[in-house]
Length: 448
Image 1 (tube, one colour):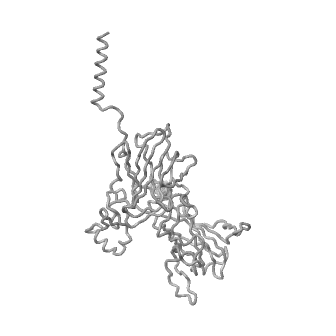
Image 2 (spheres, rainbow, N blue to C red; image 1 turned 180 degrees about the horizontal axis):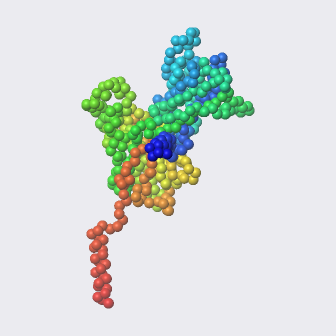
Image 3 (tube, rainbow, N blue to C red; image 1 turned 90 degrees about the vertical axis):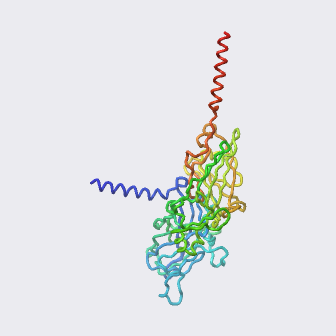
């Protein structure tokens, strides 16, 4: 093989490997969202299917305004009706006389219905406004479903063509969906659990999340402090990017009045018009992050030590409902008590238990309010020391990684961590002590 060809092959292989690795989360290696289609009955020109969206991600949920699922029909299918969801656009249905389909677009986009819709428009696990909980936080709410009646499609397992080019917004970009794969039909139990039924045909679509696809910059940052050092290590400057904030307004303090912009930014803001109302409105900070997580090493006991965690929201236009915080630290395998937060271990690799997921107590602090006096939640974690590993030296007491709502936060540089003061005596005191010892030794020798 010629050198040029070998280099090209190597580059393609590397690109393929990176495309796979970019959606891999080492703390949740099996996390994904699976979209399952179950054909429940045949109709004269198609079928009725129940579509189920299962979130198998341990600590990443889908927040408001919720999920959007899209696909491309393989033939000329239409959606006659839907229960528990709706297509965002009807499309061109002018060729139909009499009954008009719900959607005629070849690439429909489907969203959940809002809570409170009439019962005849609901099915189980629908109508939550597109919000899906993380599986590790609330497995019962980590699922959504809707029913769709498809026309101008096949009416047997052999003539049905599965849709292609699936997309998932949750609610923004970041998810990549694979092709639909026909799998063994789903089996159901009747309400009395004495009889099994099964779908006529089933296919699955697996979607994985990549933070790099969702945003070029992090969405949160981490700051540190400790009882043994007066230094407070802030979030890094421009931790969440500064040069890209042409579509993000910020306000100074509590004024809630956006700072004036000039030049290109002013022209861009004018061109956006009403869309600025939906753009993030952040409190102006040096880090420009919507969320900051602060880890404070608070107290040291004989057999235990205590850390305080505080989460602050700097976004005036965003509330975080059912938020999650994941921390990686070697002593999290020995948590004694967590105050004000719920806690679950995240065990991704067998016996390695160095990761914990924290989330708010229901109806107490599971809702991180928008920026302002109530835009923060905090708790403390009490951990038992392991004599073989515990130390305050070299930043050991601070977490290795922090995730907020499934996105990894920007950590401070390691050389900026609060250091443990040197236990040795200061140089003048040490030299004075040595001089005293020398004089006393000399006197002893003279007396002898």
